[in-house]
Amino acid sequence: MAIDYQTHEYDVLVVGAGGAGLRAAIEAANAGVRVGVICKSLLGKAHTVMAEGGVAAAMANVDERDNWRVHFSDTMRGGQYLNNPRMAELHAKEAPDRVRELEAWGAVFDRTEDGRILQRNFGGHRYPRLAHVGDRTGLEMIRVLQDHAVHLGMTFHMECTVVDLLKDGDRVAGAFAYDRERGRFMVLKAKAVVLATGGIGRGFKITSNSWEYTADGQALAYRAGAELMDMEFVQFHPTGMVWPPSVRGILVTEGVRGEGGVLKNSKGERFMFNDIPDLYKNQTADNEEEGWRYVLGDRNARRPPELLTRDHVARCIMREIKEGRGSPHGGVFLDIAWIKSRVSGGAEHIKRKLPSMYHQFKELAGIDITEEPMEIGPTTHYMMGGIRVDADTQMARVPGLFAAGECAAGLHGANRLGGNSLSDLLVFGKRAGEFAAIFARERGDAKVHESQVEEAARRALAPLERQAATGSEGPFQVQQSLQDTMQSLVGIVRTEAEMAHAVEEIGKLRERAAKVAAYGNREYNAGWHTALDLENLLTISEAIARSALDRKESRGAHFREDYPNKDPEFGKLNTILERGADGSMKLRREQLPPMAEELAKVIEEMK
View 1 (cartoon, helix red, strand yellow):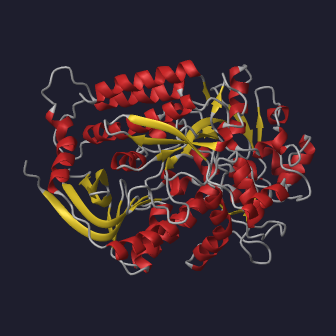
View 2 (tube, helix red, strand yellow; view 1 turned 90 degrees about the vertical axis):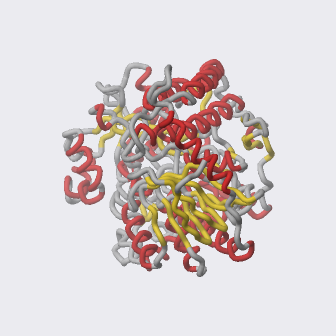
View 3 (spheres, one colour; view 1 turned 180 degrees about the horizontal axis):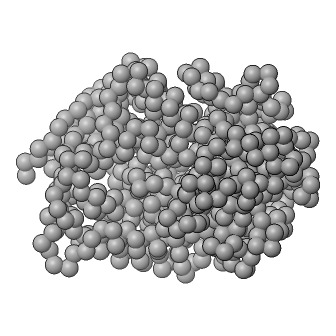
């Protein structure tokens, strides 16, 4: 069939305009190649903005004992040693330079008394390590990166969705996309493509992720022949809003706990003291007073249990709720108001340190966090797994296809430490852009085949052409059924029977999705957009369920009630998924990459 589409040509095409995408685009543009950026929403509306607490980098501005070795060790321990050690090394070593680079580009960080970048405490980090701008760090990062990218003169395609990656033989050749406003098709030819599309949260019912986060990059790469890795590790952030229902799941930054917020149940007990893992007992306060000294600035006191890793805190919160000690609306309480009497400035101190949280609760929930506790509960937040990439170059198995940020796997292992996401996207966004530009220069043009364009267009138009078909349903019902399935069967606590049931249900949902109809035309058609999102959501939901079913142990963010302990053998294995020749999902386990002797010594020293 004849397809009408616009054609754009670039050396490097970046899909996604969050922190990772912008940093990749900046690096590629600085290398002198033509860069195009395509994003699903508006420029500046990315989940990088949600990373409010800070960016993790061992600059030792607050505690001189911090260095890249401690940061590397913390990242590996937080990830339960399933991390790619080379990625964790590069991240820890290069993060300080990337933060100072942001500062040089105009980022206005909070300051120590002597003028250096201020750093705060955060869960899983041994020393104060998060450079921050109040609780709006991600927003400041996007502002600076966006401004820098725009002034480099690259082309932006906003409110456009990529339907498929195009290939020339085994290498990537560009992307087929459409304009969400008018429904017009686009072919974006490119010698190299960087995927920086973020997470998968819209596959779950309760999530901090907004509507765009439908696993596009992971699914695009998988269909193009890339491998997915460690998809069982989905992070449920322990603190999301639970009331009113209209705001359920919206993130409450870990910065609240970093500034002194404590978790309490309906009895007023700080329940986190009841369950401290042996791995962290030598760093964690033994009693409430010692924990309070720590959050109020005594660096010799140990960390409070509220700043343990996110997976552990989320499970402790769920335990309180299930055992009847939750808040009135099915969460627990997070209290920052208690510090008023212990800090100079009182309520103004809280407003200055947490301005976004103060306004968020005041406007959305009618709560003054300087006077009363917040109601919070776990929310689907971040995907540790994703596209398998080379540690140094960020290239996937498909030549010319790169990935960075949340859609790429390897750095975080079984659980991400707070603040590591922002330094991740800076370090590996830069590397992805750098090596994509090198690939584009060295490998030259790739050919776009018309047959692939026609096939992608045919698939994209199929839901609109089913309007008159009998037995078709709308896409929103299928998406809601998928979210309910994933939330209830593949959530924070998992079992064999429930996950096997989830895989079966996802198969049935695939059959329903193949028949969904989008009514109306291609202009401003939210139903059509959702129908096209379904394939990506179903693919990645199946990947999560199958990977979780296969890992018969509990590790990091993956907790199985039927296998509650770690298995040393699984601790040596990554879960790898690839698309078989028949279109089915193939799963295998693969040994972790070997750790350099120097890095093994670092971990041993830090213990």
